Length: 245
Image 1: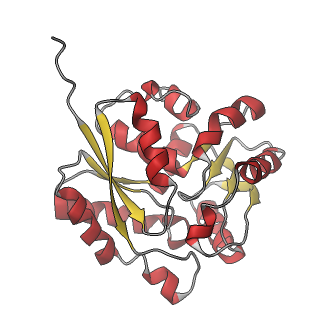
Image 2: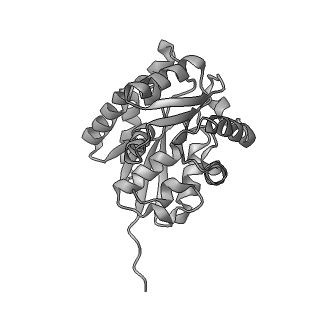
């Protein structure tokens, strides 16, 4: 009898109003029958720069959700969200350190994984696609510029309600990606874990010839890398999983 592969449980911290990342993450892991995703929610209903909206990402609230995830003994805990884009990357660095200190489980995030991918692939000129408001988009672009990444093209939908992001159709997402591709960036990121972008990546990469990094995909990639899993077994989700870098 073939020995059973060691199970891989990926913990994911999830905005409460998100409906996309859970089914997409589980679909990605279908190619790894020994892997499963497990989710803990905390309250997030809007994306804006108001005090109320920013307070949703209080570290103590997120840590309580992480502690609940720790009960199922996951291999990793990932923050499947993009708040560090506007809060600053150091917010995710502090969060990962706090999760690891509190639970003893290695942690990662969508944004830190994206930034690692940019560095590994020597990306300095990128394009940004989001559903966010003007002010949030401006803050994201500024934070990336400060970190040495130039946003050469961007598209956003100027929306604030987190649930509404899930209602954006595939054709609209494709349109935005095609429009930013015209600037010839070295990579494109679909930067929101409640946009249904990940299932479109392979098709758009084949059409445009530009690597596309969706932020649901990046945290799955990093979580699997942390446990030494072979990401190339996740087929149909784009070059991120196919390339060994």
